[in-house]
Length: 146
Image (cartoon, rainbow, N blue to C red):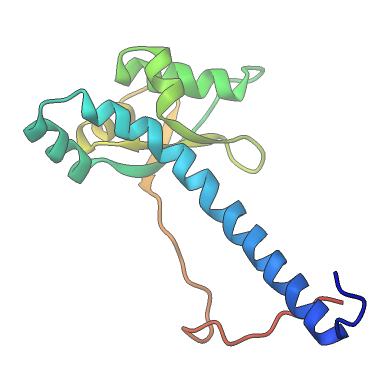
């Protein structure tokens, strides 16, 4: 960096660097989750792939796991019974919830949701939703980095 650079330009560069890191941090996990799902749809005939892409949505599955059972193993076993194998279940799970509640999220079709709701230990299956925080619709707030 140039020794004659002003403190305001240094702060601006620091802000831009921080912004780029945040954008990359947010964008990368989404692409790594969706890539395996896209490969599975490529194996289906075109008309079936289109129908499944339209129907499959991310669901949050709440379970009542047995005392002493490993949460992730129970989630995989439960979903594997619907998807046909534990390997398919491992690929379908997006996230395991293990602290405040026991459950997982996965991209499922309505038929798979229906079958999953019949499994022992499944309490509830609900669509995943994204909520907006209250506030202005544009990013006009300033972030101060000291």
